[in-house]
Length: 245
Length: 205
Image 1 (cartoon, rainbow over the protein chains, first blue to last red):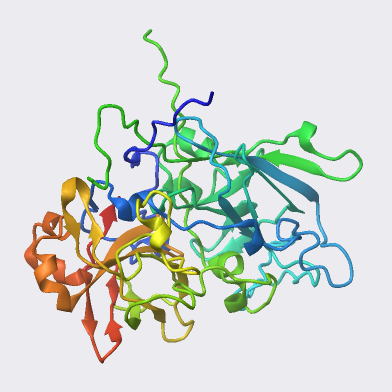
Image 2 (cartoon, each protein chain N blue to C red):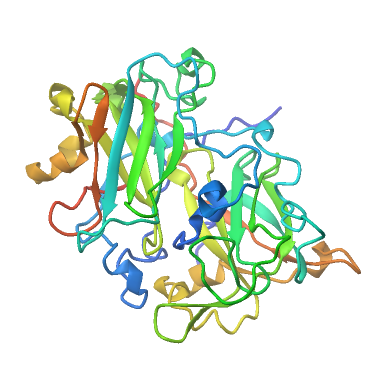
């Protein structure tokens, strides 16, 4: 007999002490793009506890393999890695069948984007985006190359640590999240203004993927583990349903 | 020491950055990779209701359009039903209707265009009714945590008077920042002001 899922109430309040504030002086672009007025807190309604759903039919076979999904003449160049982990909620429950999308620079730190003018070359065999669905246990994986660090205009000599952008949906619009994955041991993490918009060291550590020798493929590629935690939901014991019927 | 609660903590947000299009709208970044880009068709072929187009720009604190923004929309169908299994009426949604869309601003003008249908009123908490609205989530370079807001429609002023969310906004003139302005028979204008005078109301959902 399966246990009834009673976690169908509101989502737990987002902990704003561990997310970056809208206005972060060290990250200059946030200065004109940050609201000055306080956010208005609203209780969840159907508008927030629902959200888009996706199916495996929406995806292509190579969508989670960035080494192959834009290959023209051969594999993408760079250090071959697997990125894998689970999408969980704050109650520790897996989030199954949810869409995970990633994008990144190539091994030289150059993005395939008409607005990226960095002098490192484009890799003709690397697009830089991928997507996948978590399985029943919330598990997901990608194969890609480790992205390079690159300079950006914040201070004159600012460099982004190697990172992969990660977008996750969860089951509800209230869980929508975009974040960035960093790699264990990268000395640029400490120096990065975007990383340092996050006021909480534990929250920063939660974005750093450790090397996971057990998940790599011997004589082929290394692996990094990256678990993603989305907002959890309250139990509905002793409560009415949100839609009020 | 008391027992440990053993909750996990939500992963911290980081900006989507200037190259968000590579991952979420690669066609706009200048290349084709996925067979099917997601979020291009909000309503599908069978949706009932009024087809509408909402045009707008996201403006920064200096009044300049944000030209690298990505917006996601989430809405009910014309009968006020979300295509999601937690809406008790979800089986009544038209085949092919998703209610979710993804649009980006034009790299030059900053203008975005949402093609959809006007949603119906939806059930609120404790038997209340929510006026027709589209939920909006906004990410871009310089936005550290995605911003949530709502698009309401100016002609629904009677429904707005009893909308539980609009009524939480203490400063009455700020409520107008959530209204799409009718510019034609099926067209609306909705600008988002990130900061400063007429700053849009954003929600912590």
